[in-house]
Amino acid sequence: MTETTQQADKATIVVIDDDVHILELAALVLSRRGYQVFTASTARAGTEIIAQRLPELVLLDYMMPGTDGLTALHEIRTRFPNTYVVMFTGKGSEEIAVELMKGGASEYILKPFNNRDLVDRLDNVLRIREIELHNRSLQQEQVRLLQEIDNWNQDLQKRVREKTDALQRAQSEIAQSDKLAAMGYLSAGMAHEIRNPLNSISLFIQLMLQNTTDPEQLEYQGKILKEIDRIDAIIRKLLDASRRARTITNDISIDRVIDNALEVFSPQIETGKIRVTRSYCDSLPPIKADATELEQIFTNLFLNALDEMPSGGQLDLRTCEENGRVVVRVADSGGVIPAETLACIFDPFFSTKARGTGMGLPVVQRIARIYEGNITVEKTSPAGTVFRLDFPACV
Ligand SMILES: Nc1ncnc2c1ncn2[C@@H]1O[C@H](COP(=O)(O)OP(=O)(O)OP(=O)(O)O)[C@@H](O)[C@H]1O
Ligand SMILES: [Mg+2]
Image (cartoon, rainbow, N blue to C red; front, side, top):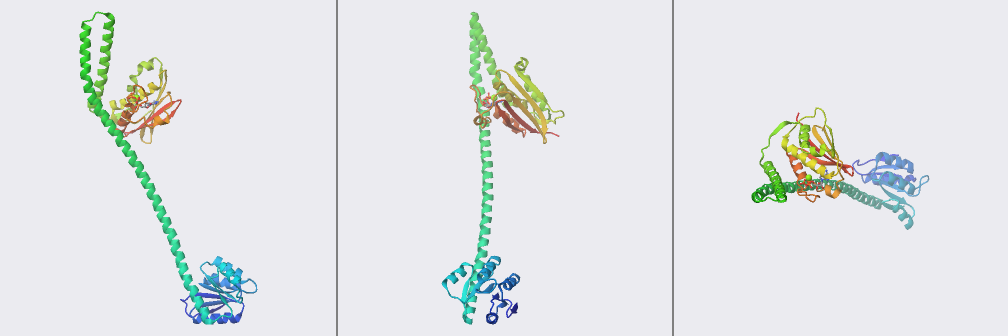
């Protein structure tokens, strides 16, 4: 290996040729031009220098004993993609030139060469190399930037999707609470409107009662009066609920609330039509709420459960604590809630029953939310349905 240096900051060129005169001449011409030149007389020695020096350019003889120029060209271009190769060839056929260019040579120079021509063509290849490498790094940068933009886009799309979902959820909650507000307003208004005509009907029936002696008529009129009283009681309850002031305390025992709500259903339970099983957790923490309002939750859930078990069944009530929340499960052995119904059961006025108002579950949900609670259908199958409620535990 021979080194001839003139200007270390100029490109490094390795010349590989088995002809010593060519090596000397090329080294002389190129180092005069300012290149750092290394020479080798075999492809193997040349490849070692390339591996050490990583030159910008290699001037490689096509015809060499041992490893031929074409094999060496392939090896250099594969192992050192930033090193460009210019081939020396004694033969000037078109096929060889095409073969060399296909093999990754940047240029080929016919021997014997003219010094001026050699320098000019190597200068040219080095300029092209510089531009191509710069382009390559720009392309890599472009790919990197495009990838980065793609990542941002995906991130942005994900965030837009999340926000859209949140917005849709918020909108449907607003729509739901609008409906609930309308429902409260309507029922309070309707209660007043209904009470007046109801009062008149009651008075007329009482008048008729005084003028009748027919026992059948008396029986019917008595029944009508009873039903009027029932309607009046329902309306009074509605009005009371809307007027009643809340009494919130933080010592509400959910077990007691459930038992109180259950008492109303004792006729069905006592006849054995509905079997109730209770599994209450010992030392369940209390919750902060208005007890009467909470009772309403269970009354509505029990009413629904009983509707689903007209010829009897089982009502299973469980309480426990899960992650700082008081959890209640109300399970019935009625039928399954079909998927299309399940999507709507908390919508105000949604009902699958001929005489249902569709107010039961929306009211349950509204009350649960007042006390930072949730209600969900945990499971529904032909064997029955489980509603799960949870509230923050007071500690
Ligand atoms: N335990 C349950 N099993 C099966 N379906 C149920 C159950 N609870 C509620 N549903 C379904 O959800 C619907 C809505 O219930 P919600 O209590 O809101 O209204 P409703 O019972 O139909 O009428 P209301 O309670 O006002 O008399 C019911 O019509 C019924 O289809
Ligand atoms: Mg109901």
